[in-house]
Image 1 (spheres, helix red, strand yellow):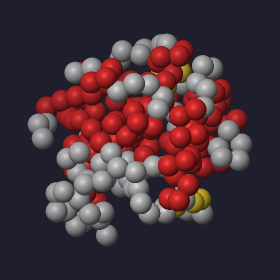
Image 2 (image 1 turned 90 degrees about the vertical axis):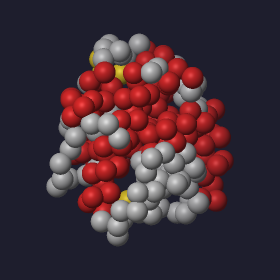
Image 3 (image 1 turned 135 degrees about the vertical axis):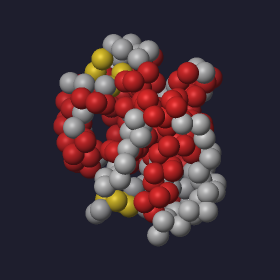
Image 4 (image 1 turned 120 degrees about the horizontal axis):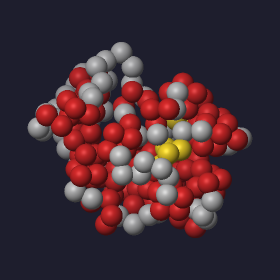
Length: 206
């Protein structure tokens, strides 16, 4: 079953494809029009704005904190009743060093504030913090998808693995459009269907 969406799509695979196309177009707008500069850095309110912009064409819940409990596999994300407090605590976390930034990223993943689209939104959010504090971003093309997903799954218990994995992929190409777009590649979550390239998205108007 497909999530309820603005497009009236009931097939989950078709929705995933259309979601990717539309959110990648919006992601390019964030980058090309420098809209992200107006969003602040490292706060949950910034993440909410990123999510709203990316998913505004697809979901009515774009930019809205979820009101239901969700899980992935055997892992349950922050319960709804504690979610707002969790976000307030994340906002207070330091973000000056690499370790502090990744620890904040891990906590935001545990919070998982949205019904869908957390990974893509939060990777942009992470890169924004890294850019501000360290003048670096993650080159996601150098991060193995399976290693990443396993490391993130284990990170609430021990974050060493995700820290090592992402640190090895840091780059100073903070203004590189291609590097930026790899962070929202839906292939980190979806398999078995066509993934749009940057060149195709550039040519494909919504």
